[in-house]
Length: 340
Image (tube, one colour):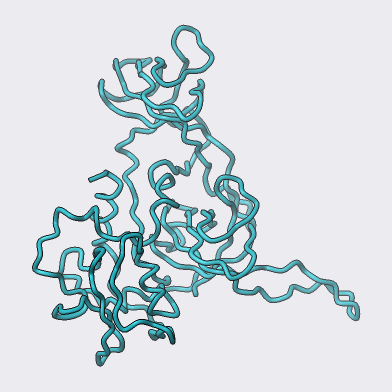
C-alpha cells in the first residue's frame, strides 16, 4: 500500500459524523440501487442521489463506533431506504446505514474508493507547501553544490546548513516563491514553495553533506530543506458544508492557468485559523465588475452569481487548496467562496 493511500484512508476515519443542518434533497432521477464500480468517488456516488453532494455524511448515516464505516468498495451494492430520519444509503443486505460486511477488508484499503479523484490532487498532497517565512535562514538550506558547480541535479552532491539530522534522513527541497496576499487586507498569508526534489543526508555536520536523490528542477544555493517526515500527508474528508458561515475569495490558481474549470486547483484566502477544515465544500460566486448608473452617476456593484463548488483538500494556517468539483459558470481569481 502506498504511503499516500494508507494515510488517506486512515485519516478518513476522522470524518465528522454530525449531519449538516440542510435537509436531504434527493435528485428526481436518483437510482434505488447502485453498484459501485472502479473509478467511482464518494462525491460521484453522493451526487447520483443528492442535489447537494456535500450532505454525504447524513445520507450514509455512519456509525462512529465502527472503524472506517465510510469505506466503500467496487462491487458494493448500495440501496436507498427511507427511515424516520429521512433517506439513508446502505449496503444491500446489511443491517443498517454504514454497517460493515462480515468479510474482513482490513488489508484491502487500497481498493476502497476515494472521496474525490486522486489523480487531480495527488501531487498537491505530496508536494504542496505554503511557508510562513520567505527567509531561507529560517530553514535548513542548500549552501552550495559540490565541486563549485552552480547547480545540482539527480545524483549530485550538495552541502546544507542548519541540517540537524543523521545520515539516511530524507529532506524535500523547495524554492521559496511569491507571497499569497489577502486582497482585502494586504496581509501576506504565506509563501508558495516550488517543489524541487529530494536529498538524503550522507554525512552530518555543518555543513552537512547530502546527495540529490530526485530532482524535478536544478537545485540551487538558497533552496530550503524540509524533513520529509515533518510534512505528514493530509487526507481529504467526506464532502460537507462548514458549520458556520464562511466568506472568502479565490486568490490564486495553481500552475498559473488562466481558466478555472472543473478539477482545477485553486488557492483560497481562508485557512485553519478561519475555521476551515479538510473536506469543507464552498460555493463559488462570480463577482461582476462594477457598473455605472447613468441616472445617479454612481458606481454600483451587481450581485454575485453562483458559479460552482470547491472542496478543500489541503489545509494551511491562513490559506487552503481546493478542488473545483463542478463549474456552472465562469470562475476567476477574486471570486467569492461562501458556505453553500
